Image 1: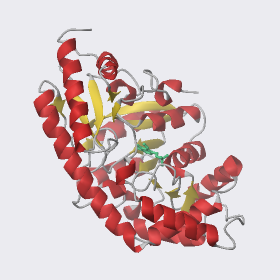
Image 2 (image 1 turned 45 degrees about the vertical axis):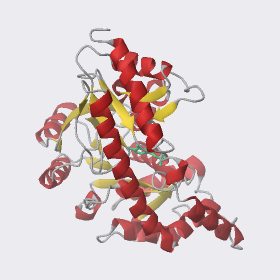
Image 3 (image 1 turned 90 degrees about the vertical axis):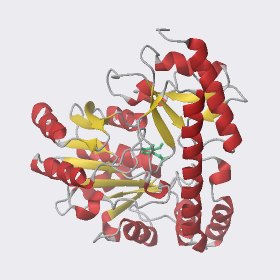
Image 4 (image 1 turned 180 degrees about the horizontal axis):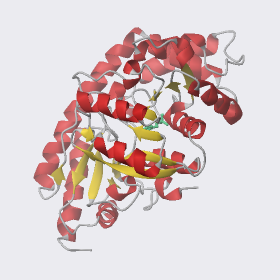
Length: 380
Ligand SMILES: Cc1ncc(COP(=O)(O)O)c(C=O)c1O
């Protein structure tokens, strides 16, 4: 099992550590009242404990299809136990053990882990501020024989990047011309900071090239482990088959709960207020970093998502700094974990969504700044 990507090399942070890391929003940002009411209503349904269709409740698939838009129908949707399960199913259904898979570099470590667990060989394709350069996957498809690209064109984890509109189309065209699939991880669709969120690639895909991954864990709560795969064409049959052998179907009470949550009049309001809160936190974090860690460089100010991606001054090792920060009571993500191979420079992934409030966020950055100053230059 690819432990490097799923286990934090520094171990669990001690009690009292401020978390500027993590993949979920703090409880104060979760719609806890909506979730509790939805769970109670779901549990009262007489059929709550019946088996569910293997593809997911039809009504829930219809809601996911509506959220994606375009001509997507409930038949194009497969309900999964969150995004991780969706990724694992998609990798195994699309490519056989030993096959290469192109991945953005940097990318989400647990996607690398899911690909490796499926026996695939991640091949990094560099990202710039406008996303993946289309000539890169074209060359990489040709050179490696890969028939699969994993990407996150909506507020990429860890960089927050959204590709320029022409890039999105070009990458899709390149994949199609190479006879490849694109797994498009749309985990951050509901994490926009208030601006426009580009429409899902699968809507513009007439050829069955795109497999779309979505999940409710980020905008709702980590234990609302409901996600979906959306795809057209024969690949859906293969993914359904993998789903059946994995664990047959997603537990029905949780699917009913998700249906209640998405149908609640408060859901849209929650997503809007979450976006506003994330935007404020992002700005506070960026300001605090400029003050407390002026030698670290923000690679951009993302318009969505949960974190900032920061380039470290030359000579500062990300693992050493993350360890030093941990000793000073703050957990940050060491950037090297986000690269499938050797990282080109030291980076940190610094989250702004997991702290209880803005004061804790600011204090966490102060502690990080002290760790960076104490380390000084050239500590390698
Ligand atoms: C890019 C990306 N994809 C997928 C996931 C999976 O999320 P979950 O399994 O909680 O739905 C995450 C979670 O951190 C993520 O960052």
